[in-house]
Length: 335
Picture 1 (spheres, rainbow, N blue to C red):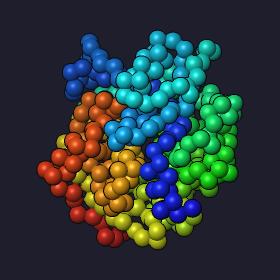
Picture 2 (cartoon, one colour; picture 1 turned 90 degrees about the vertical axis):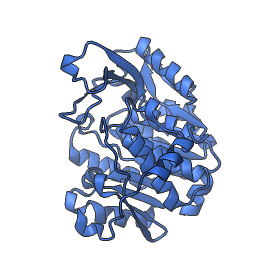
Picture 3 (cartoon, rainbow, N blue to C red; picture 1 turned 45 degrees about the horizontal axis):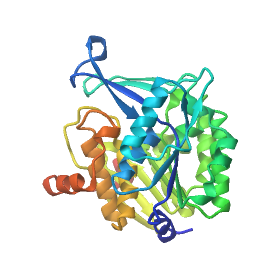
């Protein structure tokens, strides 16, 4: 494949997202610590769900494939996906002892706590039959998050989906999305992520996540560059230091939009959803990266993840009124 082919498939606007949807609750008002809270607000969460919400803001046609618990919280998630325009017909309700992914997230950056419950998480019960029933071959582009690879049977199911995608010439973009508490070990994560990378046309992650893939923090950036030889789009994010994108034998360095965040969560989902959404809207790659960075900056200034995802008008207005920091020209020494 090629970057041009990947973008052409993105612009056909028929996305299958594989990964988790969950429930996030936030102590209210913003700034309240969990242990002091008497009131909470509830929102849709989960990396793939958030990404789907962001992509729909660009007119993206998104179907989410996952499993959720067959209870009131699962039905809340279905209703929220409907509200945001993410198609939920592929989602299977779990009747066993599994539970939906559930998180308590503080809207404060001071001694921030995100408490995430993933024991017997329903999304990790995704099966090969779920993949077969989803008709993977009918989609133009598949977006996965690395949490779906963390445990069986979801791991084998997702790898099977990647195999089908490759056989049908369907590009896959992966957000590494490494969450150590769902993996048996970092070594296992390295093994499985690298196996998945062989099927991907796009890989997006931060410096800590590429350190898992390479086995060393100091080798993460070099590793990202190395795998770009066989991958059309690789984005290496470095937090406040910006990002480096490898595509078409080029390196694109970009800064960030500095803001005063109220939480550290949701930025990665907004970035990936907006990067793909901007390419869908026919922006060039350089501009798409900037739009993704702006979306990430906006999200961390608001309560929630799904409800915080901005639309394109809000992003462009933000970009007019905020300045992108200077890109890092020598990022190999900056890290």
